[in-house]
Image: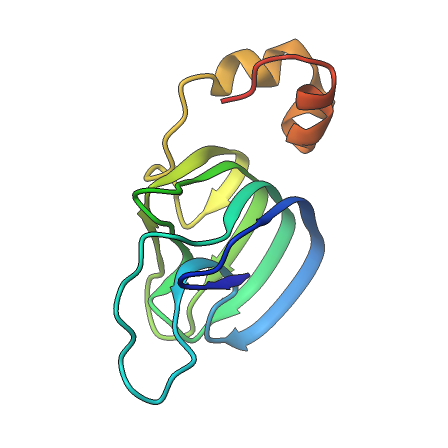
Length: 147
C-alpha cells in the first residue's frame, strides 16, 4: 500500500489475509512517502491517513532486506496496524522490519520481528476479545479503545 506525498483522504479497514509471496521486493509495505517521479520528490507533510490495517497469515520469501516496511509520516502516523501469523524469509540471509511513525503490534508468530511498531494497549486488546486482535475495526465499532 503506497500513498503519494501531498495526497489527502484516508485508507482504513483493510485486511490482507492468507497470502503467499515468492521472491518479491516488498512483501508487506505501507509507504506514505511514495514518489512516482523520475526525479526525486520533495518531502511534503500532507499525505493520506492510513489506519486499521491487518496482515494475517502472510508467508513467503522477500528479495529485499526489509520484508516489512512501515514508512509513515511524522505528521500523519499510520495507526492500528495488526500483524498475525507472519512468516517472511529471504533466500540469501535475514530479513528485517523497518518502521517510522507506525503504531500497532504483532501477535502469534511474527517473523521478522515487528517490535518497532509501537502500541500501549496490545495485551489489553488481545485479552478483551480474540476477534478484536484479528480485526481492529470490530473494537473501534464497539467503542472499545484500540491503540
